[in-house]
Every structure is written in C-alpha cells, then in structure tokens.
Image (cartoon, rainbow, N blue to C red; front, side):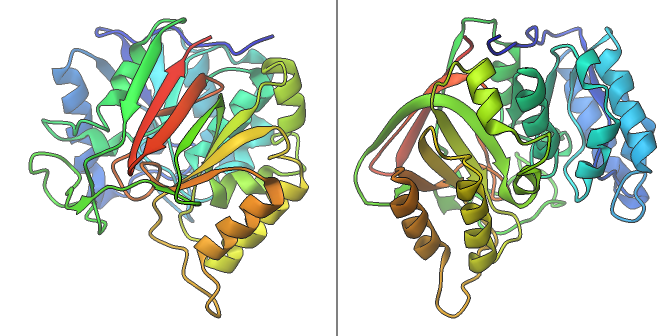
Length: 340
C-alpha cells in the first residue's frame, strides 16, 4: 500500500481546531478568535473544540479527553482538515488511546509536539500528514509568502506537484504575541540554507520528519517503526529526513541523533535537512555543527542546516510520505513535492 493522500481542502469546508497537546490559556483566547476570523474571511468554516480553550499541567486536558476529541474530529465527515492551535509537551501519552485502524485520510497540519502525532500517523497508516504552521500563527490579514504555501499544499489534488522556495528573511527573535504588521512574524534577518560540506545539495526521496525533541522518543515503540513503514508504504524508496530542534543542547542533540542512527532510522535515506533552531547551546565547546559532522561521517548522508523548518519562522510545509526533491545552491533552497 502506497501513501494515502487526503482529499484537497476547499473553501466552504470546515476546519477543526482541537488541542491534542497544549491548549490556549484564557488570557490568550483572543488569538484563537483572530485566527478563526481570518479563515472565515477566506471562505472556510471553523469549529473549535473544547480542548483548545484550556491548559492545565502542560496539556489542554486529560489524555482521555484529548484523545476522544481528536478521534471525534477525525471521524466527523463534516470536518475536512484539522489544524491544532499549536504544539506543546506531552502529546505522546494519547497515542495508545487512538483508534488507528478507524482513521481515514484527512489533512492534519502542525509542528512542534504535533509532529509526534503526524509522524506516528503516517508510519502506522500510510496517511500523508502536513508539517507546517500552527493555527494561531494564521491570525493576520496577510500571510507571509512562505507560510501561506500551506494552503496550496492542503488544496492540491493527488498527482499534483508543489514547489516551495526558501524564505528571503526569517524572524531572529521570537515575538509571538506582537501585533501583526502585516504578518504575524517579524522577518528581519537574511535566510541562508547552509550545506554542511559547503557544496551543492540535490537529493530525492520521500519526506519524513518533525521535531527531534519529541519524535525521537518514538524510537523502539509501535509508533516509530520506520523500517516497516518504508517497506510497506514506500516500497523501500529512500527517505529525505527533515528535523528541527526546539530545546536540545548540542550534546542532547547529538545523543538523540545517535539513538536514531543506531535504531536504523537513517539506514535507507538520501539526506537530512535541519531547521533553524533557537536552541543547540554548545557544551564544552562541542557544537551542533560538530554533531552534524559526526553524524554525516557515520551515516554518509549529505546535510543541510538553517532550513525553513520549525521554531524559527517562517517555515515551509512538508508532507510526510510525499515524493520529492530538495536542492540547495548558494544558500537558496527549492523543495518540490509530488503526491504519488
């Protein structure tokens, strides 16, 4: 069985907002309303679940409530796509409570801790999922050129080809709750994707990845069986890995990559894209670049870093399971995906 792509998202359909990880505290409810209004202006209906409005002990609700609301939206034929408000910390605890065999293809978009679910869903079912912006980051009248491509990705038909280019500028410091002007993100620094060995970068394969802080904890569990997924759903095509670091120091980052390497996740891969990171602090003069060099030597994989992925916006939208190509030349990246 190959990758199963959800039906394309169309204006007039309904987007569901649920919080399988963290919800939104009361003092920030306005940003949920603002994002809802922006989608409605663009012709979509929006239904917001109860979990989106609450947050206690680093989660929106109990694991049972979060799992039930997510399954309800996944099974509701009136909801065409699900975009949670944002990520969080402990989505992983709902995974055993989900009815995996009952899930039918439907676009789910998000990043950070949401990638824990996106990654597991694609591996267990072969359903394509979209790693990209959060719901609350779409609360402005204008969407920046990179972020706005999520709508093209979710609206494409099976067989379509979508091309995305690296950003011109990125936001150097997190200013999440500053008023949009005109975008949510304050794009103030020049973007430059870096190839680890300084040369050109041009690889093909199937996209897979997420937040390294969270998806790495799926190693050795029923939700992280990359080898079986690759055999059953990709017919052993190589994987283009994309990974982003939210909180890990350089040594945490390296230990995590070693664990993934030893688990065989990189055995049949064509390369790795690392996103820009607000973290990655050096430890005893050991840096994330040192780690990347050692991982490249160990796996023999080409590596690009400072890509438009993750917690230093904006970010391109990458579809887990989609066929594609990534090329980087003189700091500019081009990502092409095909739904096949």
